[in-house]
Image (tube, rainbow over all chains, first blue to last red; front, side, top):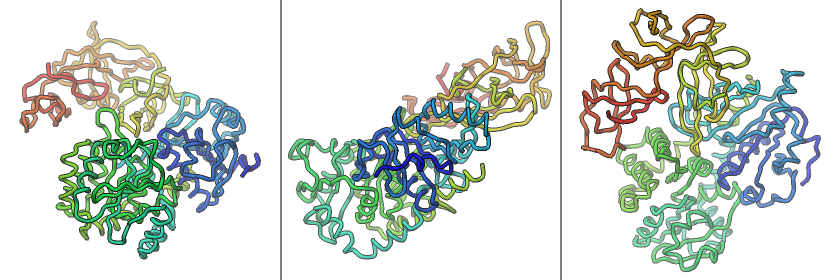
Length: 396
Length: 186
């Protein structure tokens, strides 16, 4: 759907700029935020995205060839040299994950400051989510730029002194309603073309990076007594499984089932964000990665393994440790220890330890299930990210 | 111009038309390896303080002020006293030393640079690498020699540095004063 230029520039709008780095992570977060700001706060949001092809995987109705489109009341603009000329300052300008704002926009803001300094948008750098202690000390701090403009660092996080976590107001009600009736998950599996799944079967979703740990787990599940269904989209996770696949990765098609002894691998079609949430709500265990799916797995109130984005010098393990520490704060040590060790060994690609810790961890343990259900409210604290963000912008 | 990542305690930068002395730097890593640098700053005109955060590659306008090579002389609470080659003494407020204060010890012979603004000594930069003695650390837990296992150590002057597990009490270690990181045993 095309939108009019006047809609892009009503001067009360917010602009969110996103550079797609990892296909679904950065765009996943910004798309959710944009939708929530539009739906819950009636904010006109212009979402500027440099790669609509990747975006199209999580918003199938998107036309990658169109520069201006509107979905869920969010104006989606293909960020290119031509479209950027139409930028007009609004109330807030968000550069997602430290992406570089074009110099032409900076020049417009400098000119605006000279004429109407009070009309300058609040300029934010929305950073990556981390559970580390330093986040509290950096969140909300100003960042005076050499061009003479003021920017602020907005850091998501798990405490009241951070920027909070993205979570729609009605999400938990929708989730609880979905999970209250097992027919919902069975209907979803049928809709996705997944065959052979019975209500009592264990179903595990996988959206990880490449790791030998995944292969080890699947080989272990092959030896288990009860059936295990592994739901896995085409993409990076499958690169770790080429040795057990009956065909090349290119030959795999969505909807395909691959029986491997007690395990059935189901190749998933790509889905939109609502569909992915429902998938997470429907599985017994979710293996997720990066930031967006990591957070949604927590909101799914199911046990999960987090495959964190790998960083130089194993710095990601520090971030993993920081999260595990707060996640396990109220979890019994006999569950917390194997859960942490499983996450650590999975991230280190240690096949033997991953399988050992998987065996030690009772995923069906009532306390682990209850902890997964309680955790979302603990993590959210007083308010979600969008709510805190709107207040932050108003207070500047 | 320097990047935020290159800024060190003792540098003076211009922000919004005012000179600010950098009292403390704290570098952390965001997602995808990007650095976030937090600076504690003091306005040299107003004597007020602020904290600011920058991307590691953000450009900051550092200003070159008069500097003199000095050595540390003594501490006269709350001032650290430094002396140049001609035996002139300069007082620097403890607050303005920031993290560098942890490395100031009696008898140290490191060549420091004292920075002046309007004739007043406002900050001190230590050499990038200094050597200090470890006065306390726990014994090596597992006999690790790889340098990957780390533990805290107290150095002369009372500061704490995270060192490799093989470092023992009495060892002399090289420290990077920009980051506070242990570099090697010397």
